[in-house]
Image (cartoon, rainbow, N blue to C red; front, side):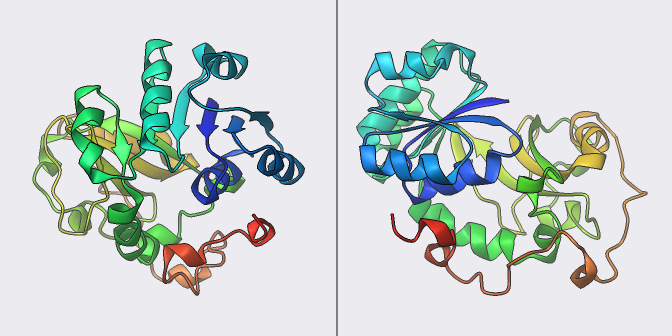
Length: 255
């Protein structure tokens, strides 16, 4: 997939780093020194400029992008650039929302958003430290992919996430989209019909998991049990994940 990430701060940089091996990423940032440092660290195309400059977005071939993520600390920049991406036919758009007082305008304009302050700790607590999440974290090596699906299977409607994911090492549900707002689910969160969900899936199970959520009355009775997840080769560097601010990439510490 072709993607544009606006903002090369901690969120934008780490997102680009996690995706650059499997996707064509263009990273945009207004700070020239930051662009130079990122250019030395990542194998992606880096553009110096602002997200409200349409010339910069056109240089990034925004009309050819599959997804656009605005991660700057400025809500106005994130909103305006996301609206421009939407007008240029980008299908997947996510914007960082810094001030929750701006929630309504993002919703009215149909821009999907994530507020890091309200979502980050729930993501760490509910997803990363869960055993089923640990077995799938190596997305950067191509071992897993994120799929966005609409829930059509009536057998799992209003069933808690913890029961849907029970005893499987094939997938985890990482986000639920409701009313254009991204919700990081807890184990007790329930799915509704036609909910959009982002699912992190091991690559060999992509089609099986897609059918499970999108085909009515589908089942996954053959899901494997996890006897000892500590032996899964994909698990790396999760021993000390207690706070999102500790998840810095080593070579990025000087930014």
